[in-house]
Amino acid sequence: MATTTTNFGWDIPQSTDLVKDGATAIAALGQDIDTALVDLKGGTTGQVLAKASGTDLDFSWGTPAAGALTLITSSPFTTVSSHSINSCFTSTYVNYFIIVNFSATSGDSVNLSMKLRASGSDTSANYSSQRIFGVGASLGADSDPLGTDEYYLTNLDKDFPAVGFPQITIGNPQTATKTTILSQAVYRDTAISLNQIGGFQNSDTQFDGFTLIVSSGTMSGTVRVYGYQNS
Image (cartoon, rainbow, N blue to C red; front, top):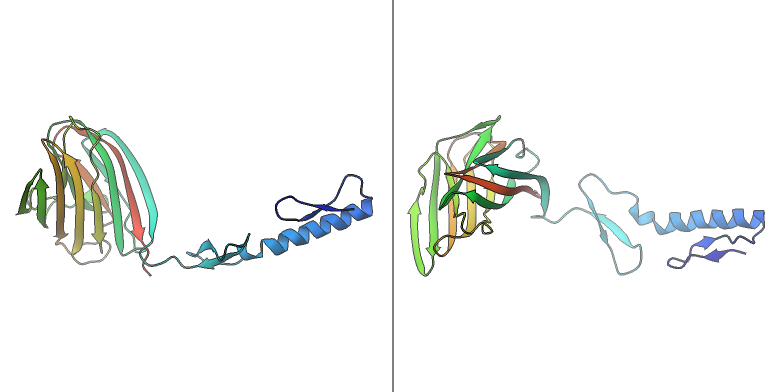
């Protein structure tokens, strides 16, 4: 006589069953599994599987909500003055989100900046930006902190190597129009500081990557690039 599994109650044979009874139990087990897992069947490209209710094995396929992030690449770097990522911007996504966890391994009051890339080459002109920043209890603002040949992100100091966390949103890099860049970062030098920066790459260029650059010394860390779900 067949018994059942502990968690789902699927029919299984016992060692004392007759051969004919065991075959029947195995057939029942196969049908139990097929019925229980039917919700895993189906779905289309780009859909995700989610729980439909609190019932065991009750799932449904659906399209991710607008704004959901998909990891495109995670790229570590160690003791470098610059780090480039190619082919991360494609026609698959319109907008992108970049997180950089990094530390200065040498250098004091190091600037971290970004240059967009096209076909493996940095674009070193036509950047414009506006910055609002706080240093300790003081507030300030300026335009184009590093000029127009790169986009400024944040500062870092080797004396505070654990602090470095810029977050960058890139809009329309793969479109032949101006690319929007919006970033924020917290860092510590003589005091805790915060940067909020927005700007453009004003060339009508289809960019497919970017380079992170420190103004002096070296840096180590990891950069992660995500694509925003289009719909």
